[in-house]
Image (cartoon, rainbow, N blue to C red; front, side, top):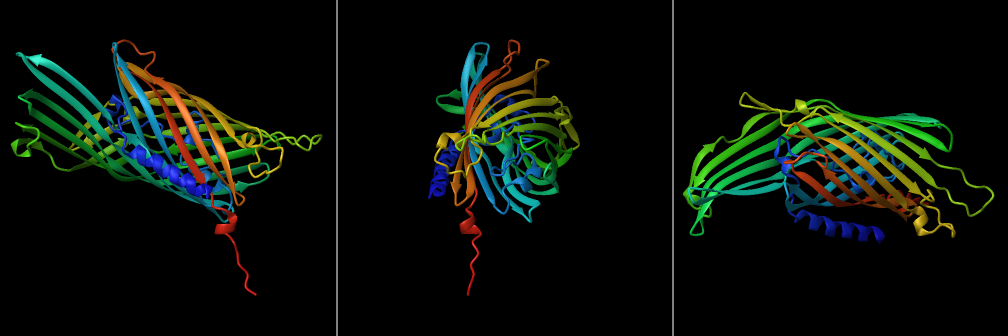
Length: 450
């Protein structure tokens, strides 16, 4: 019953997210859009440090080597939504922006004790902006509108295997096969209004993805003793030369509302080409402290403390678009990021129903921070995105299986230390996600006939 309520709540929230205006950032007008971190509520609560995260009751699509580390014999379904509010400021002029969307859908199925497979969907990049300007020429007002929208999604199929599964150490590897799809649009309009009739020019450019890619992941876990353990992890996505389709249409119109007045100046149709996606490497380290039970007290609790960090780098300066023999580059600069997170729980055994263990003892409290040298450069200065996060994990035990509800919030600013004339973004946002594990009794009950 509780799981049904969670699914119903998610449908309501995600339905509301889908009808929101997906306005993101004016910087997303470049290249392949805004390839920022679009993490779920679990990773976002820890500053986005997802590379070395592994929890048996939570999916992690950012490192394919984790699929075999979920709870044995239990499929795990996960989904999430996000909403962000932004304040854009430049030379004393301010405006608001926002976007809502789905963070992911995922299904992870461990099998044969050492293996796991996964299927998932998550955003790779987004485009969303609206810029309006005007000027007076020969006593006539000319208006300019620049808008953009769209997303590139990645659908993935993953496989993971535990090569070493010992008491003191374990090693798992994994691979994600990805299919990139989606469409990004840029639209420009220059027009004038005369007697409520708009006349002018319209230019629409589209970039559509339709190709495959892959990435590799690794997890090495070393347990110094039952109290202290360390995890080293890494994810590598090689350089990819992806097939894209580009189109452009330019028209002049006498009345924007009547298409019969449109005069086509340019129509390229669909032009096949390539987008060169640079390599990405991320490495992570996690330390977990799990003290033993205090034998002097029957009602002692078993706390747990986890500290995780991640460093990632991507050579975005190598990004290039190639269509009709023409190469377009120089839209990005190389990007690096540093993310850290801390998680604490007062009692780590979620299925414990002892009288002295209350609801708040089982909650997982998370905080994090991040600093990202973004791929955006303005006036020779690279923009830095910095912020703080906080989150909470709520375990839901049904028929001995542990499902979770995750909630996180974040606050940050991009371009805080940039010079005058540079657009600065301050923002806050919220993520909501659920991980559903079916109960043993319902999915894996065995019947015996006499």
